[in-house]
Image (cartoon, rainbow, N blue to C red; front, side, top):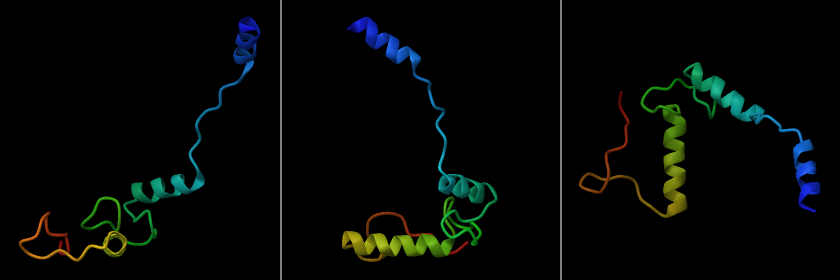
Length: 83
């Protein structure tokens, strides 16, 4: 049984890992200095998103987690809003 299984495993071809077209598009936009989410905004304050997408995602995360916007004196650093 073991020798038969080894023969079956040895006959298989290995596939190379290919990235999806969506991931390729995002990587291309990021390399061009554009937002990988919307593809139009320039990256100003954040590394991976334009300012509009970053603010939209932050507010959506606050709604999902039941949080409130940042206030002076609260935990964490102030969100970047000015260049």
